[in-house]
Length: 131
Image (tube, rainbow, N blue to C red; front, side, top):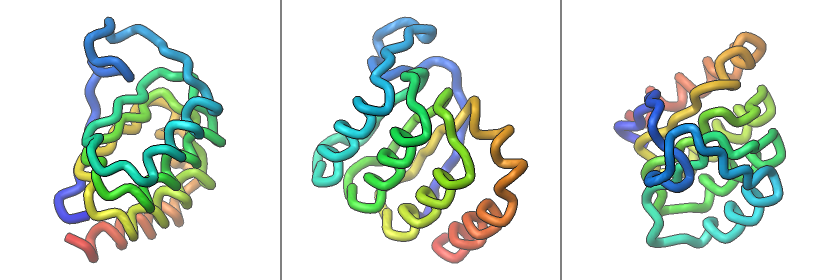
């Protein structure tokens, strides 16, 4: 987890060559299926899932995948529905993950964090211990 950077940008999507406003709408089912296959991934390094209509079940599946995936270095879930329970899954996953360096969570996340202060404190402490 050393060097993990949480950043914001406005020009990426599942398919980087598409216009930045394109929504691919893979939804929860697509995110869950993709996450299951990526648990054993050893080649994919960058995954942009921005604006894909991913709700909390799909976000939880993606965050859970991070606990098992040893290759992914960049992940963008901007515009996804993220709440406290999903942050808890992320915190647990990041304890085991050693490959992820950039995580983008622009959009719905920030209003939800007002209700997750204890989890965010735990996440910050965990990140600081690993740096």
